[in-house]
Image (cartoon, rainbow, N blue to C red):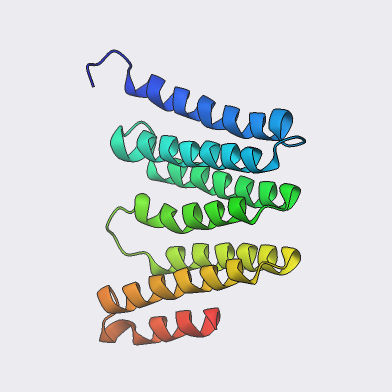
Length: 174
């Protein structure tokens, strides 16, 4: 806050700390301290989400599409780490980050095709993880968050002129 560390350096340090946490969890801790490794990986993931959000939302250093892409990469990394480590905790972090991404980076404009296209891909990946690892709770959480997005969009954005779009979205997800 005193200006001793510039926003650019804050984002770079956040990114390095996040990546360091993930690497340390996999290289140093994974074999001997599984639970601690999962927590450290989770902390690294949370720091990466925060750093990329801050780069766009707090500091305006990168554009929305770049921040969105980076946050998607973090979500994909969570999925891959959860498969590699058989860790539902990491998968849930990816789920939370994946569903938080559109809200965190929202410009306030309405792009239902882009939003629900993204959610459809996210749901597909999460349902795959749920099925592959026998984590039905992950699939249920994914469907619950999708329902909440749909309900919020229908309540807040869909008017009579968009009834067919809303029905189409619900049918595709069904």
